Image (cartoon, rainbow, N blue to C red):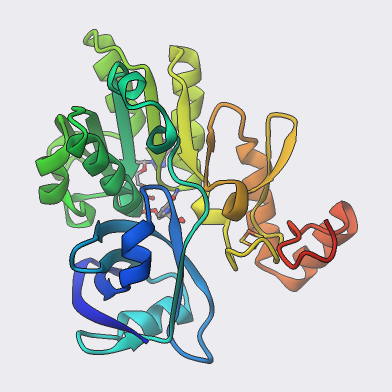
Length: 292
Ligand code: NAD
Ligand code: FES
């Protein structure tokens, strides 16, 4: 059992929990994710890790209520426990594996949209811990939906907060801020954009025009997170990839977002899943080992 040590509502339907998971905390890196299961009846929910405390042996997860399972999890409190927390899964962010001196020479721009602020935070924190000052844009629909601002402020080089309705700090979507910063003369070598699919699609459209290589996280299309269900299949360049095994992070300029979003919608219904199977054959990655 994985005990919940802290539980906090960050905003409407968005929750943060600190969970005792020493083995995961010992080895996990930014970009990786865990799968949580509340009890025997609970669905497997893939969640990117928001923070790690290796000494305390804890990980922090942030989730939004999007269905029955996340609604039930939101009802858990301090002292309750998850039946399973499996991880770390997926691949760490690319910069974690690269030569540190090379990474230090680059100017990074992190773009976090809504709940996507949670997976961006450990990446910016990693940068800070390695002496790299990254610029960060956090976008939310309105003031009440801005999350993790104080934590982000402590690790970001410069933090730009923007709201769609202008109720807090700047007004406009994250793409507007990227354009404004570039117009002001800022230069970026890499952009990391994590948030809703539509945001990542439009950030990539813009950064392609601006010539800024961009990494995105395809966590939103994951379902079982094991390479078995086939939900997270996507096309990156001319290759078929699976977000949960090969990702979740990919070169955003090569991701076919329209196809990924269409598949995501189709995967929600039995009819859609049958159609995908008919069109694509065995859509799963082969995590079972029987069909590779
Ligand atoms: P949201 O809809 O409030 O959007 C957040 C911000 O994204 C907006 O404030 C805006 O600045 C920007 N944005 C949205 N649409 C845009 C567009 N068309 N062009 C440019 N910018 C745009 O976000 P939310 O409700 O918090 O998002 C929830 C979604 O985030 C869920 O679907 C979830 O799957 C996804 N999510 C993704 C990740 C990931 O790893 N990519 C992680 C957590 C959550
Ligand atoms: Fe099921 Fe990736 S989430 S195969």
